[in-house]
Image (cartoon, rainbow, N blue to C red; front, side):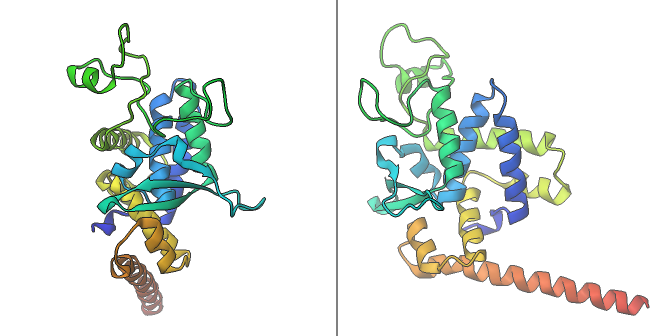
Amino acid sequence: MKIERALPAALWRKLRNELDVRSAEASAMQWRAARAAMLLMGDSGLRREEVAIALRQNLRSSLYRTVDRPVWELTIVGKRQQERTVPVSTATLDALRAHWADRGKLFDGRDSNGAPTGPLIAPVIIPWTEASKLRHRSGKGIGPTQLNEAGYTADGLNRLIGRMLNQLVETMVSLDLDDRMRLGQANAHAFRHTFGTQSVADEVPVDVVQKVLGHASLQTTTIYVQAEKQRVLEEVARYYASVAARKAAT
């Protein structure tokens, strides 16, 4: 696992704030789709393949929610055809609601057709290529910008996120050089690794992280623990070095 691609906590916060800003424009439908996908991976630890197959009918308010912790849960079938349930944050829900509004679909409640169903993330603008026709067309008269109910493919999500990350690297003014390098090396899977490293850093029990990520072995999850220990030691070593340098200068 290339967990070195995980975003540091400060950069993850910067990115989330920037995504909120860019998603605020009425015409920013692609940003809202990308934000929802990134948060599903970064807050729920999903793989891009799992985001691509995630369905609204499998997302529900958790029985274990409280007023202070209004968590939802999403059931998916992941790697090795193993079913698991992951928590979904309030921020992710808000992003999904905005994305569904762009699609002209009801996210909450029921309408004349019943409870909401369909892919959690789907293209709002469909390219009018032969491949897109085969995947998305469900009837006659569908134009190039009309929404259809086929979701993104895993590769399609990767391309969308990669395109948006490239724009951020080039135009996001709050990034320093190190941030730009890290974000430039990130891909869709980096957000799943970000969940792993940040949850361990915030002292979420490692067996809980294992269940959310869907690792077959606890040993796989402990890679995130080792990475966090390494980060702590490196930061403290850097501090020791700076103290020694200041002492030598006096």
